[in-house]
Length: 171
Image (cartoon, rainbow, N blue to C red; front, side):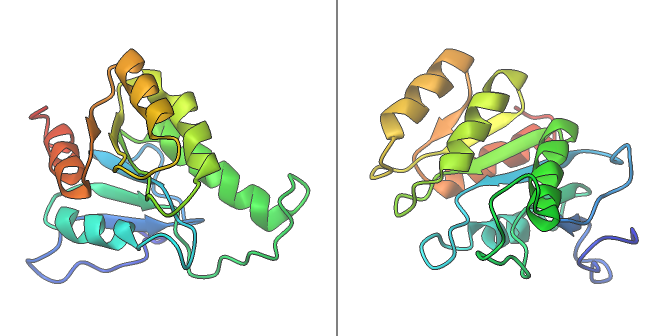
């Protein structure tokens, strides 16, 4: 078990190593890895990251989850706030280092940072995206995904299934 991992696999049941921000995995990451990008807005977005992590737990992979229990909305949204900077730099570093970026746009959220990250990483070949009907910028997401040939799904279960295929080199 890596020193900064946030979970300990149960004997024989879990293989995935899970890292919550701001904990870093080894560099380079051993084996395949997935970053869980997308809606996080507390109180609006479901905790889809836990659902996906549970479905990935049996795989010998590294899961990189930006949802952190100590997040504080009072942190200044500025590069000068060290806590905010640490979070943003961790997210960008992990998206650059991972093999797969699984991005979910929850329809009850705006997710402006996720839209920004979609633009940053769409052409990397790493992405798989879920954007259900009702997301306020679904058309933008559809067009970016179409142009960059990013697999796009309307429901999270289909996105998770495709991410598993990418992680196991079946996609």
